[in-house]
Image (cartoon, rainbow, N blue to C red):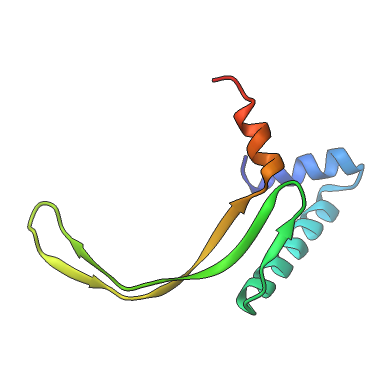
Length: 94
């Protein structure tokens, strides 16, 4: 599902126009971004939580040339699914 499809679903399920749904989605995403940039974890009940974690520097080896490169530390967004979501996903038959 892409951005436009998500907006269409939001509009349909909430009986609002697509521009209103887009504004709602953009506002929600911006609030989540602001909180993460301020170091505050964001959780959605029955879905999961997002938090910022520091990835330590590490040594990488190019498989073809065997050249070693030092990858610097960086901040990444980590998602941890809720137990409810995990159980529902595991109930799906593949």
